Image (cartoon, rainbow, N blue to C red):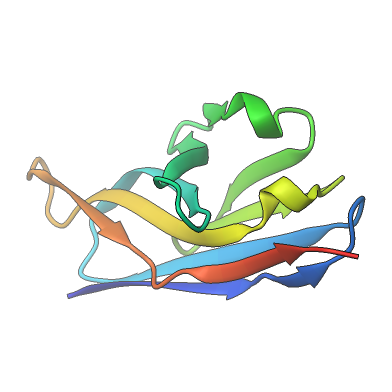
Length: 120
């Protein structure tokens, strides 16, 4: 079984910063990509940022220049969020596309979600 465990999030003031982290554990051979999605009330889940195992990152236009995604050892991904805006308020979900065995199929997994609220 595979688990994605998120940490971070919470309440920040406009212009402030928060950092999210996610660790994948379980039966994992490799993780071609990890990323973050978010879902605000009444809206669809949307991509925030993702990063490949080779280090290539992609960002939503709305967060470019403000958010930074990085991958560490031990199957971890972090999202540094700066210059936060009220419209960044949402539940943020960690996402991983991974292989459980060499040359096997890829599977997508999700974390449980963590709330980010930006308000004065």
